[in-house]
Amino acid sequence: MNHSPKDVLIHQAEIGPAENFIYFVGDPGTRQMAIVDPAWDVPQIRQTAAKLGYEIQAIWLTHGHHDHTNGVAELLESHPVPVYISRHEAPKFRPDVAGIKELEDGDNLQIGNMAFQVIHTPGHSPGGQCFLYGSQLIAGDTVFIDGCGRCDLPDSDVKAMYNSIHHRVMKLPDETIIYPGHNYGPKPSDTLANQKQSNRFMLATTEERFIKERLG
Image (tube, rainbow, N blue to C red):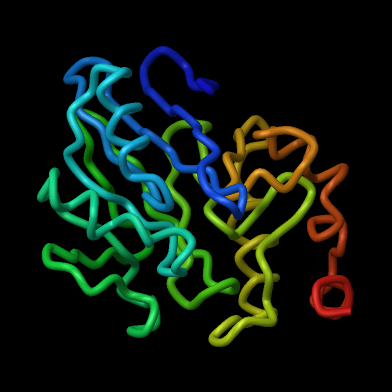
């Protein structure tokens, strides 16, 4: 499903048993693209990229959990491209592949002639990160539509998640469109303005309320 403005391709595909959203992010001018969080069905990912008419130039990882990375090695067999992950990600979550490059908060990720900003959003995992281009935010498992990523997993940090959502994501302009890492909500994407009204984790305005809401 395409939601993006004309100057950028953001193609969203639900793939796999965990309702993952894999993203095909491209520069229409150069027809170059990155695959965000390749997992589950690499032949389908290759076919979708070919159908869109773009050349895969990079793999971007919002974080290192297996359900977002289990297709990396297979995709690299046909497309030996750089793989970008946060330098803060726990070693046990990093794919064991060549070509890993580390990202820091505030870095720019180039694809074609476009640059996405890297926003470090730990909480679900130490190396959680979002990718921002204009008003388009690929949010991984930081924010879902009417939800957010789990914080009861090994290396999760619920206080860090509160900070990531309330002091990073929610500080973006209200017209920002959130593209989540899973299809867990009532719609596949939404504006930040709408989410501020309906997402219970954004409505939990204090750290104490957020922790109670997230961990019960």
